[in-house]
Image 1 (tube, rainbow, N blue to C red):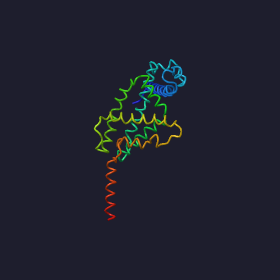
Image 2 (cartoon, one colour):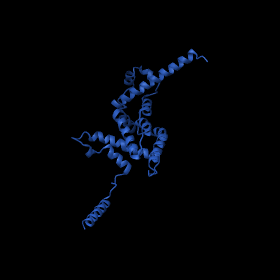
Image 3 (tube, one colour):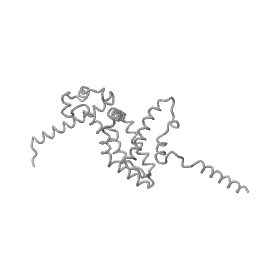
Image 4 (spheres, rainbow, N blue to C red):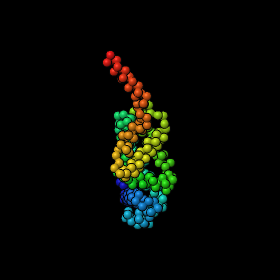
Length: 230
């Protein structure tokens, strides 16, 4: 069946409109990250996107709606969860390590994402998080299921609770790392490495060898030495 000229024209117009909308969101992401939400104006967004100021309102009612679009498109959780949900790993430790590395690599490659995270959290009191977590639900379930399949000893936490702890720990590790790197001659042993973080996430803060166990092993070895000498 032949497609009418009107249909083709309408589809082309829709495609152009979507491209303009995407360009506005990309530009707004950069301007919000650079100047803050309140420091970036609609005029700046329009000029950077090469769109008339009035043309913005064909796609967004106001600046807050632009921010909502930016957050739902570029929020770190929206970008990172699909990636880490597909992480590979033969063991729980390897899986967690690879997922953590992908998380940190994403933030390092796009530092503006952290600024958007902070704007949403502090300027808007996390107003968009319920919607984000609703979209993250299936990814969190998949992530948790894969972890459980790797090691049956995983704590029986709700998948979203586990993701909260995991991502919250990584965000704190990333931010504190950026701050500590500014100290004079920091070294990995002093500020901790990603491997340190993975070990704590997987095994906890306690050493696998307790002092009492170490003493018992020393005593046993000492007894064996005495018996051997006799």
